[in-house]
Length: 397
Image (cartoon, rainbow, N blue to C red):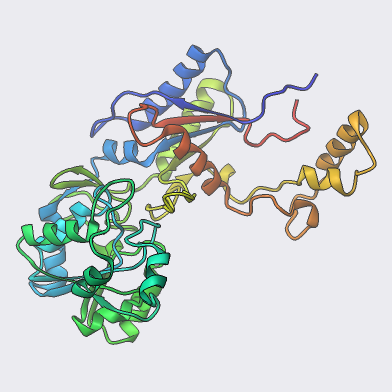
């Protein structure tokens, strides 16, 4: 009889990672010990994934508020700077904003509305409709925003992020002016110096600003793209993907991850004789239908992965086959017909109706989302994930 279990995703416990730890050895040992403890075998095409956080911590990829301030001051001087399109997050952005505020004379903080880039809402679309506000064209001052919408608090955190960011900037000694707009060029009426903090639209924002006459434009990905006084850094993403470590320190997105995943794959092969795919993952790429949050606040889901995780799924839609090509069949006859179809399928099903409805996303984005949900973001203590059967199909025994 064919085995009944398909994909299995296991959270694997690991030691608390500290700066300087050998992440390759820790991940390899944790996977081997978990398999022994759980009574299962490691197989070819298993997937081992680890959170970006433990990689960055092992690397010691940290920076302080003062490091951020110094980099910002070196780029802009002690001037008025527009800080546009930040996400609403105490964990993701507050410490970055603290560093920016310490490095400039005045912050013109421009918030997108009704929500930030990843879906954290300031106000609802219904509230915009009720007040007759057009978010595509209308630029609101803080006074106008308060007059129209009052003091809205985030439904899950209970924080009024407008007030929170305003007070944070003042505490750091900078002046602050807050506006609300969704056209990045609106900030140029207040200052020609801009830090754009958007994640996935940052290249377009920079282009629009520069074409509209901005004098100095740096993305958050260009702040701490190189070390400051020996600080951590990320040459590709700067402060994007960073998280709060302490009240005056951030952990940056990990750098130079490819040698790590390759080394773990090699050590697992040496220990088991099996070719296991390995990846580093951050935020998953999915949206909460209630809170409206699109989880992906990292610049990418996976900064590094082994070659077997390249590409997109190449799958047939079983219910399509059952309802169409094999609609006259049932029982074992239907089962064998579908199995034969899978065995015979093309190596690239792009554009074929039989694959319609299968998820058209990259493998690393799908698997990274599964890993993020498996490991969680709190106290589970499972920053490593072992997935088995992901590449199986209906024919796999």
